[in-house]
Figure 1: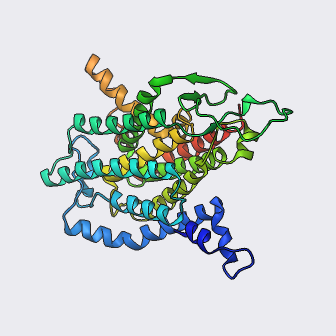
Figure 2 (figure 1 turned 90 degrees about the vertical axis):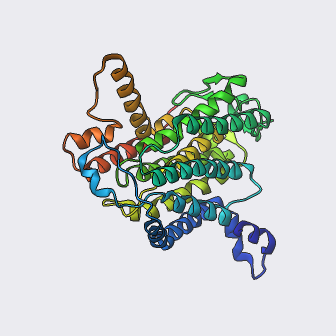
Figure 3 (figure 1 turned 120 degrees about the vertical axis):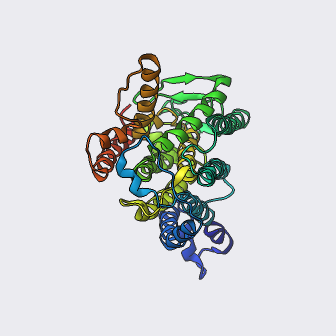
Length: 383
């Protein structure tokens, strides 16, 4: 909205000249973060009261730590607040002519709706299972395949700087579509994995993996939303660099036309996440539920795809990867041997069972998130 206000009213030297600040992505990103934060803070108490009135209390899994039983009266589905604040903030501050903005918002709302239905079933049936695994997986895979097919059919404008020599007289912004189905390998220059049509399946794998990994991480007060904030900080920096010809030229990374607008979405997620954390920190007043975790995980996966940082996502979301791998190891080993590697999975519950207080587990996982954030940003330069 404010971006179009600038386009509509700004005239050099007129009384509206101050509106020119809205053309800058950095300025709009700051305001997007502030807007999302304020929406979360202001509407948070009302959402919590409404969820309590609806008796939207989180069912507690039986095999988890006994300390979690005291959380049985805490409302869930707080992801509604996160999605609302992110979408509204983006509508205020983004360039809505940018298709990537709508792609990310579409994926976020789609997965948020799946999570909402899952949470609703958990509440009405008073169990911690919700939707069947097959239904959730089919819904996520379908979304991922649609996204992959769309990008395969209508690829982004991507520039690959290594196509030109620095002293080439024709050195200029180079837009190409042939790199859409290729993956850049972190820490290596000019190393590309060519996937061709298999990129469609790979995109689905990214969406399914990222959304479920965040969902598995959402088990302690503040853990998942804190990790989301740190991951969004990484993608905020990478989105801005990827969408800026000068910076991408200097760092020798893919340039993606229009990717700078994703910086605003990342900023909105950061602001919304911090606002939600105000109410989700230990002891939590509300949980995000699958409504929030599936949506935010999908949003991060989509941003990774659109900025051509698909493999870097493994580093950005290192904690999410650790959580998902711990579940895979636990289930696989138990089925093969009948023995458990961890006392309980995901791994954050393992440390709780060892006697670590919940806040200690959360803060230590946040520290690991900071390390992964720094490492992921380092991939821009260390190549």
